[in-house]
Image (cartoon, rainbow, N blue to C red; front, side):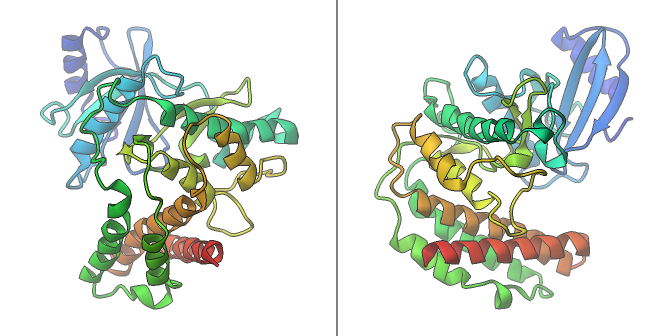
Length: 339
């Protein structure tokens, strides 16, 4: 057993898939932004990365893994930079949870530090910012029906459902009596009302990553371009402009809410990101402001869930406090944009 993965059981399953022979060696747990387990290992001269849910499964953990694997399989051969899927095991009998194997990614995550020459070049960092937009522009341009992803998400009334869905999520935190919740969340109901009153009249459905920001991508070492978009657990079919809104919601504007990279000088402004996306899409960006506000609302409510659990002693207090501060910052940003 290595980091909650039974290597003997995994090797036996790989035998059945025709993936190498002999023992699994050099197994190493990779640090990731999520609670999911990432295990890098070698077998018969090939390197693999296994992804599976955390040891204590959540209600939707297995379904999430199956969805991720389905989307990665569909992305093969497209211009979207993604981890190459090798094989997937949808049932939980082998390792106690659904899992999949993917190719290792040659690259680095910018939020943990920039290597040279990127650390010294504002011009290269500017290109990195635009490459981030290229990733979601390419994703949003794909025909999800052609790729066999029909049924991955509910397209009908996607925009109409957003506020009620996330308001219900926020209300559900009342199950933790210790959560002191809404009292210091800046005008969260006002943001919800504004979103309902200003919703775009229509949208063009496509694939959404669902959590798109600088901490969920890997960059190449040899060029200011994406090596892969990672962490596909919130992927669905809906309005791809929400991915651009998510990028705007998390883009540094001087507050602590953002995903930061050091040094920052050279990265494009939020307006430049939108202008760059506009050159690559047929979508109407006249409501992009709305998607940014929705992203602040949705992400803030998601993060507040960890704070609620932390108040009840079910998550680390320090993490809960940090994410609660992020929620406040996101809602302040949403209110500024509304004004």
